[in-house]
Length: 333
Image (cartoon, rainbow, N blue to C red; front, side, top):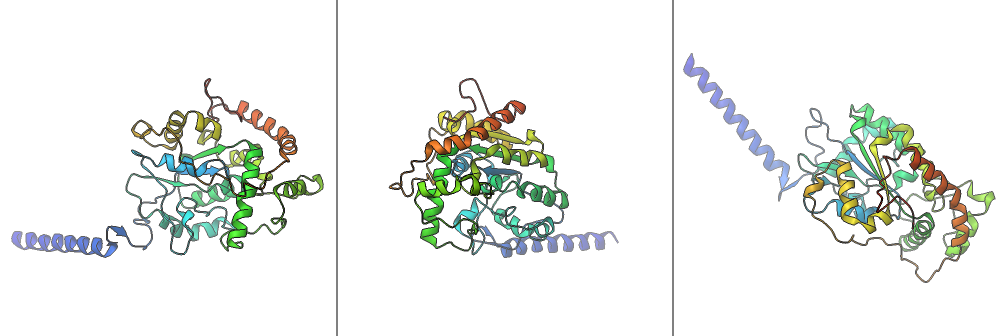
């Protein structure tokens, strides 16, 4: 009886070892995981834990690249087949689903973006549209994560803001150029209520600054996307403010290493092991259409004054959310 038992165990172990080897061989090609969906999804959910929410044209791409520097355990993933290259960074999931049920049904597909990430990596979704889609994105994100049984309180959010006039002009020029270049590609959601993309920068903002018109603009329209306090309040309604870190592009440029390490630490990464960076990589600078000079800066400044005051009140109410030190306070230059 004893020998028979030992023999049956050796067969079982050998069969198991053969199954493991075959599974690994069949699951990888040249060291890359095949697109067969997330691993261990039944016993171990792997969710994005860090969201770089925006703002658009505020240095999110540069910050993202810096956060992924040497010594980082953050992972942004890769685009799926048929998706544009920037979906490696920007997943555009929670600004595209219509409700939480759709989000849950497509969540495994969303996780495939992270199939290249390793055990122990902190997963990042750096979709800058999430901030300006604050009317729906935070609610849908929270509902989806609650439905799949994730620890919502463990999620972390990072927001980098830019002086709103410069951001709005950069946003308009970038979008106008991309629309002209790509003829409104299918993956760029058309703003059906805004048509004057063939206008100059001045004419465009004269149009949207008309009080009878600008109240109709919402979401990620260039003028509206700079009303940061409204967007942050929307996000704070769904998540505890302590889960957020808000900073400015000016702060990041002034003290890159210090601010970068604070951001990575908030994300849960090993800030002490991060390779220091003297300068940020310049990406998507918004210098497109450089010959189209905007002269409406004074009008834009007047528009944003009350919104900047409200942002200051929000900072005063949540001082621990906004990165600010004596040598590098939270402010727009």
